[in-house]
Image (cartoon, rainbow, N blue to C red; front, side, top):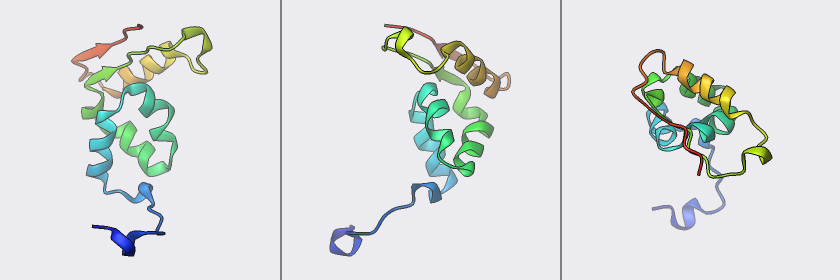
Length: 96
């Protein structure tokens, strides 16, 4: 698939079908979704914000230097929990 016909063509990932985008976002950690995915376009933001299934299990695991981060993990954690809309069943806030 792809081959010579697909070379040189750029893909517009923002036009992914909603269910494909949701599947990808569910595999990312909450930090990646909040800091990157939802900022790509309005459609991705809507998907990230409104899909409560994505936020039932929140992975905020972090192996970076807390002092060197450009974002506030506590605020991000609150946003993630809020997006679960009461359906949160698991959360990981481990710092290694």
